Image (cartoon, rainbow, N blue to C red; front, top):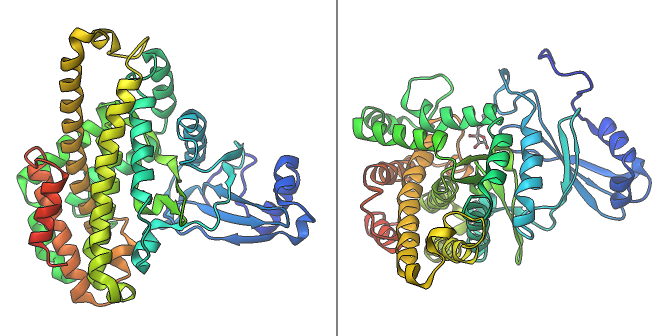
Amino acid sequence: MSLPVPEGYQTLDDARLRAWLAGLPHLAAKLGGDSAAWQIEEVGDGNLNLVFLVRGPAGGVCVKQSLPYVRAAGESWPMPLERAFFEHQHYAIAGPHLAGLIPQSWHYDPRLFASVIELLSPHRILRQELVAGHAYPQAALAVAEFVARSAVLTSPLAQPFETVFAHSAVFSRNVALTRVTAELIFADPFEDLVRNRWTTPELDHAAAAIRNHAAVRAAVARLGHAFLTRKEALLHGDLHTGSVMVSADDTRVIDPEFAVYGPVGFDAGLFMANLLMAWFAQPGHATAQDNRQAFADGILQQVRLFWQHFAQRYDALWQAHASGDAWPARLFDSPATAAAFATERAERIRAVFADALGFAGAEIIRRILGFAHNLDFESIADRPTRAAAEAAALQLAEHLLLHSADIADIDTLLAQLRQDTPN
Ligand code: SR1
């Protein structure tokens, strides 16, 4: 490796990982037995990091290590190692609010920029499961709970603002990954850059139309500004279906390395966008053909459940914490202000909905025209089918960016989708 790295850092391989874990008694005990017999598998399929699953006779651990570059691009795209630190900080700061919805975090090594977390088994990545045609009806509820708890409990709605400011200061140093998000979502897809790509020439016309659409560009610019300036709550920052692990009865949100304070609608919008892209991609997935219509409807149901549960829990958590030092509890804590408080909450949720739809539009565009693509579309072998699915998703993205404030509610959006897209 030719990139400079801090003293003490070395990329983990099988032998180094085995020796490192063997030297950490609390982790070696979780694995059990002789370290030479531990089974090690590198499974990282994301864009950035190394991910190892280590199994011993007593149990398993998952080890994640930053590389000094973007894994999906190679050393030509250097990337600071500190992302592992911010992921660890998210587990430490938001973790107490998110019990049961995230993996347990067991260790962080600041020299190796590596963390050790609970090995989730028999969990699988939600995105891959949706591509394979496997339904997880409880997943959207759990992710909505994650977003609602993060949105209220890390914010001044539930905490003294001094605490929130201190936490926000930690994540305001997560500049490298915030730049990745700012550029990859809110700028790059609208420019002619070598790191952009789309997979079918059939999309050339749609791509040009979106790039040259002044109102779309203005909407994305507004959202990018909101993302960088509106420090409402601690975001996961990369909440797509690849950041969710599922089993039949359990759901966990992983990979919070992009964590930063920002607008609550960002996480909600990214998750809904990725479910919607899974839905658009369904005609291309042979594994789901037998029961394709019902499975596709089930994905739209997940979008609906996600939003409804998020809105209901955001409202309930805000009310539950509207006392003491939480802001603006002091203005709403008498019976005389109950109606005004209810109106305030409803208007706030309505504003988050509009934000989320806009962010969803930006996310869809960047996953089709930008650097980082989705397995949902990429795994469709038949090019015309893939092009049709991506073009339909781009149409929705444009609609969301231009009309986010006019879409009455989630049911209106989904009814319109079903009508416009024979899926
Ligand atoms: C250079 S990183 C590209 C993308 O991968 C991550 O998962 C995020 O989605 C990021 O935007």
